[in-house]
Length: 177
Ligand code: GDP
Ligand code: MG
Image 1 (tube, rainbow, N blue to C red):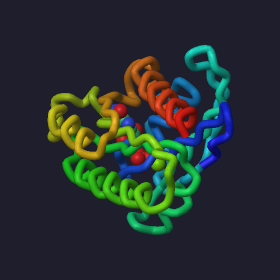
Image 2 (cartoon, protein in one colour):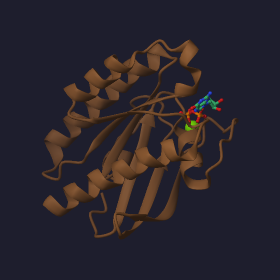
Image 3 (cartoon, rainbow, N blue to C red):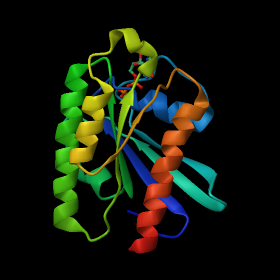
């Protein structure tokens, strides 16, 4: 990770189709882009203002062929946003495996305790929900992760709030470290 002052690297991780790219694009541009190349992996940056601090936020929107070269984001990130879709049970199970893998990595390699944030996306599709909020919250609790539900398709504020909370957690940890 960067661990320099005022720089925060966040990696978005999760099953294909959970909405990582949609959340990234929404956060960066305030727009919801419906069709985004599912194979694309890219890094974006955004100058931010959180709690009166100037921060350069970098977002890695990963596209993981599960298990393939996780080191690229594990080594890079100061905080991890693990995404699932509340409408897709398999993505919730995948999220658990990612939380497990990241936690193991953190235990083995560093004293900096990178924050984990679990995000249940697509709450605008409430009628198709297959993962309850309580399940999300309990999974997050098990891994000592923060937990949010949001939607890349709805108001910007709901998405911005999640990213700001992730940034705050990283800064808190960087200051402690
Ligand atoms: P990724 O593979 O994790 O990057 O997923 P994408 O961001 O490409 O999203 C997969 C599909 O789900 C796309 O058709 C998106 O438009 C859609 N999608 C992503 N987030 C949301 C959301 O919050 N609500 C709804 N209704 N659709 C979403
Ligand atoms: Mg994507």
